[in-house]
Image (cartoon, rainbow, N blue to C red):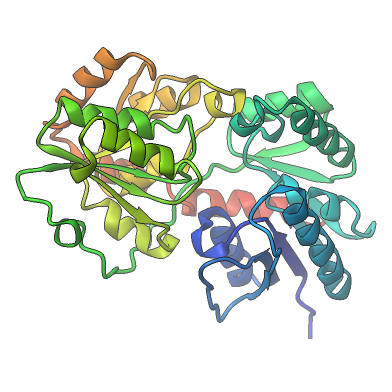
Length: 366
C-alpha cells in the first residue's frame, strides 16, 4: 500500500479563524495527503475528521516570548512528524520550515509583506530584525506562495529569484448556518442599513472611517467582526462622536459561519489606509467574502484592490483619505441594484475552487 505523503502547515494563529490554512488543509487531505496543522491555542478549537490539529500554548499574547515558545514547540513537533512537505503559513514559522531536512519540500506562504507591516513602522529595530530574519531563511526555502503579483515582484527584487506561485486568498463557497442574527442580537430596526467590516481590528484598516460615516448616514449602523488591540480606540471614537449606540462589535467568528453573517449586511468595508507598503499592495480576502455574500464593497483605490473592485463591478474604489469620496460612494452603494450579479461573479471567478488545482501543483515532487 502506498504511504501517504505527510504535510505540516504551521502558523502563529488559530485555524478556527484562518480561512487560507483551512482551505489548504482540506484540499490536501481530500487529495490524499496526511495533513497536520500546528497552530496557536486561543479561544476556540476546531475538530476535523480529515486532518490532525495540534494546539500550541505559547503562554503569552504578544512579543518575543510568544514567538519563541511557538518556534520551539513547532520545531519539536516537526522533528517527531518528519514531514515530506512543510508549509510556513506566516513569517513566524519560516525558521523551522527552512531548517527541515533536505528531502522535505519547504514552502513559504508569504501572505503579506512582513518586513513592511504597518505595526512595525514606528519600530525600526523590530522591522530590521524581521527583515533580516526573512532574508536569511528565504534563501533556504524551495518554493514561495504569494497572494498578489506585486508581492511576487517585491520578494524577487528584495531577496532574489525563487520559484514563486501566486495563490489568491479567496473564500470557500460554503455556508454554515450560525446562531447570530445581527438585527435581532443588536435590536437593529429594518429601516437601518448595515455597514460591515470583518478581519483583524488594527489601525489603518478603515474601521475608523466606517464609524465616522455614521455621522452623516444616520439611518445606518456599523457592525465589526473580529478582534484586536485597536478595539478600545474604536470604542472611544464611537463614544466621542456619539454613535456608540449604532456601533456593534461581534468578536471573532468561525470561518465556516462567517458568510452567513456577512450576507445580512448592506455594504462591506475595505478602506485600507496608506500607512504601509504591505497595506497598499494588499488584496484582502474580505473583498471576495463580501461579494460572495452578495454585498458591494467600498474599497481603497490601491492598484490591486481597485483592479478587482472596479473591473468586476464588486463595488467602488475611492481615495481612502478623502472623506467626500467616501460620502459619494456610500450614497451610490446604498442604492446598488446588482447584488445578484456580484454574487454570481464571485462564485464563478473568485472562490478557493479556482485556486485548489494551482495549489496542488506547488505540492508536486520533482
